Amino acid sequence: MNLNEFKYFKSQPLNVRTILVTNILFAMVLPVVEIFAGAYIMRNTGVATNVIYYQLMMYIGVALSAVVNGFLLRFFKSNHLYSFGIIVSSLSLMAMMFVSVDSLLVICLTGFFLGLATGFFWTNRYLLTLYSTNDDNRNYFFGFESFFFSFWNIVIPLVIGAFLTFIDGRHLFGAELDVNAGYKILTATSLVISIAAVFALSKGKFEKAEAKNVFHIRFHRIWQKMLALASLKGMVQGFLVTAPAILVLKFIGQEGALGTIQGIGCAFTAILVYILGRISRPQDRMKIFGFGLVVFFIGTLANGIMFSAAGVYVFVLCKVLFQPLHDLAYYPTMMKAIDAVSILEKRDGYTYILSQEIGLFVGRAIGMVLFILLAQSISEDFALRFAVLIVGTLQLLSLPLAKSIIKDVDVRYASDIENAKNNK
Image (cartoon, rainbow, N blue to C red):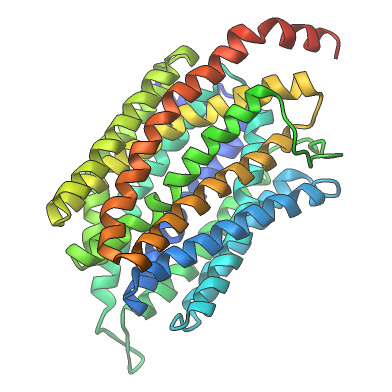
């Protein structure tokens, strides 16, 4: 980042800068949570569906924590709950590495508690970002954030892969170390980084968010469409986390290879998303969204047709490019919709963050159940080959749906939103 870009970053409001620095630090931990936890289970059980069960239980935990967080916001500030989520996520991950994952019950319980912890991180991250940014600087915010998420997705998997390879078979104080011992060391390091992220967050000046009545089931047409879009996003999220680890270990064999593949794609993507976030305007989001969806579909198609090591390379590279592009367009669109419907319906912002988490969970559950049904009724190979392709194809529906949401906010209901704002 050159001097001009640093000055531009410094020109952002204090809370924006604080959240970004916090997320930069915790982004170092996320690859351990999102990639290597699944690889750890796959390595120790050798059963792909165990990773899916783990991920499904983790998402149940995330959804439940969003509900609990809604109650806790009545008593605690969002940044304090955010800090709690960061620390407990690392502690839960550490606990997972120190228990045996040889039974499905243990796998499901560890996934559930890790999801319960990370849910506090994600929901309060959304809430703080919603109230700290506006539609004009959200492209920059998510572009900057995605740049470092992508950067750490290059560095951390490479470092972890090299470290696990290096430590296997080494001796320390007379004891022989293995890969599982390496995982334990990594999770302890993650806790230290999480503490640094919490310290960074403490520098912000956040107001207590309103959360008087956040539980609703009936919403405006705009938000109904947004919930459908969230379900489509959720459907693909589980596969973005689990499928690469399973496929790499199946066809290539080493976690280090996973880090190498991630690094190749992330180097290009990190620069691309930062530039797009810096120069793009709100009206450019759908172009970015559509490009990302097509790239992901190509990756799932390549995996479905080839179903080999070469297909895995193409799929993972497309996945690495798709994810930050998708987020760069999705989250500002989501927050634009919240800005609109919270005025129209006179409700707190967390109402919509909570319901969005439910929408994400519905999609995640559909995706996970699809994989499990195909794996158990036909075979794991069939599920790995075609469940991902089915989800990739369904994702193409996201583009017309997102365009409709933007049109609703900017055109169809623009006068209603303006009148409600004036009468507020």
